[in-house]
Image (cartoon, rainbow, N blue to C red; front, side):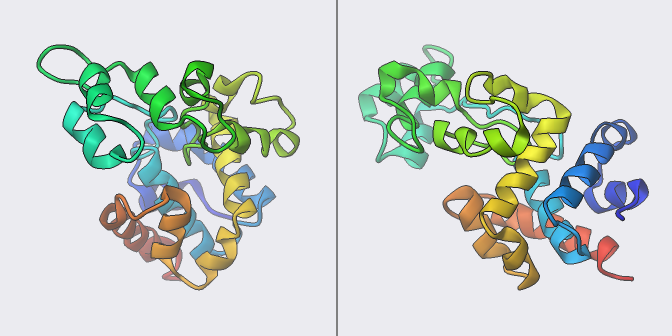
Length: 210
């Protein structure tokens, strides 16, 4: 079993974050067969990146006008980016940003449905979209579709990440040590790949060296 000290050294978290996350992560990893040093190293590296070092469990959408066009140019118009993105005239309207960029994706309704913001990323792996929330209801034993903020509690933030990981075959991909493929499945691209690799190198150095 992963020790608390190993978790802390593998992730670089503070004592307070170690104590807050360790019991929930150990339980979640055991439940979803993240049970080898290599699987655990990959998992901790990926959720460490997604959560900003275990400090954030709700997606931030404080995008600038230019960032919206750069990242989501196929989903948002220039006029929408100017109206809702952060610029010299106003702060970002994070609710509208989420509703636009996540509309009609992953089981969400249209912009007016509000599903984009309601089912924005939550938990350590940033579960996003109504369909992804719904897929976890039976495994987690709670209705996170009706109450999506439940995924911001440490227990379900950790368990939802581990369940999603297993459901998407990431244990087996971790066995092959393919960080790029894991990143594409989680992210839809390779955003943050360098940080993910750096975190993985650190975690493997602690967990896979014995």
